[in-house]
Length: 190
Length: 289
Image (cartoon, rainbow over all chains, first blue to last red; front, side):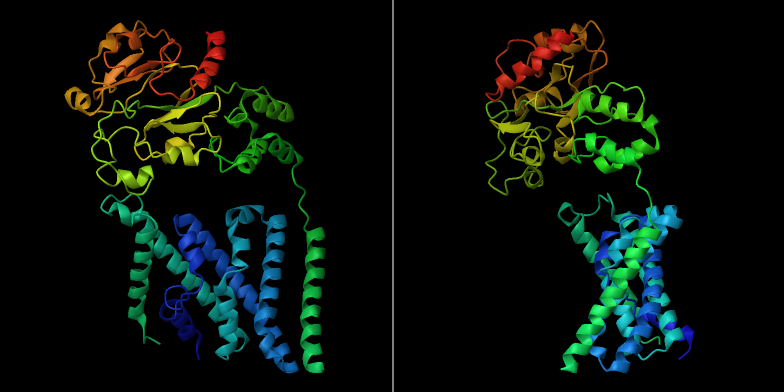
């Protein structure tokens, strides 16, 4: 399978947020403003690639001992520790980036999209390089969804054409559903 | 046995290795925390009300440590005491924090404001507002279902006899009630101003008169009475400029409907609550004057 197919597949067709419904919490929580949405998206790309780089070899180790079923718990341990570690490194060496990522970085620790991409890499039978490409694409897909949705929300904010009882969360959820529906148009592309 | 032992040992080992790595990392990548921030934060009240304009006390403390020129007097909850302590830590001059209080711009209590209907829906102002603008004929005034009362962390605002009343000695001027009010009847004003317009209706005089006996009808008598050009009538509603007002109370005397309330006068408050509170609040103000 070539890398291009993997990227198109994970960004557009099987978009983690809009088609697989993983990582919905930050998708709704952090998409109010464009710059924070981009910050969160970049942080997710970063963590997804790192987490895959760390968990793929571990899975081989687990398979070797025949305890592949420990996948979930071990992956969670590793992702959590990895994010903590990255946070410390950033705080020390790139304080500006640490400040701009702010609270999002620790939030990603428990983001199911990160765990999801690590596990689905294994399930799809990708090799190491393919896994990394797939993780990168998953992050880019997340970023894409965040950016599109924050654009939609900025139009919704303070829009008086919305009935009062629909303002806020209801209209946000309804438009998220419509965006997801729009992405269904990519179905069958790969 | 090994079927259980191997996975347990493995997970423990993974956890242990990660713990060691994180422990080492926390020492290697240790970033010293600025002690000033901790000290500043300790002096702030910790109500996290956001009245200073920052996202809570922590944020204000770190912003202050980074740039003392933003001023130590931004905390209305702590007032002058806290401002002085913050300035001491930073080694700069303390600015004076002029205390603010919430002012309810409505006196449409149950006896004065006409009812449009007997509202029996959800007992919140924001819900009532969506149904023909609340239970009163006047759509500008206090709805009186206590959204402000519920949001106030200091118990300084209460709904009495259908209208919100501020206990000025408890109020710190954080503005949470003002943000909550669906009709924007509450505003934050300097505490030194004791003469306030207690009406928020911009309707024409005749319409206001039909809706409420305490409303401002825009007759401009107050404007003419004021010797300091502090009162202006715009959009059928009087407004007293807090900078120019000297608390003389002439406008309140002239007002034919009693829409202007002089809290210094020994007038019987229109509503029963907290007369003691207002009396207490008066005392320091007179000392100032």
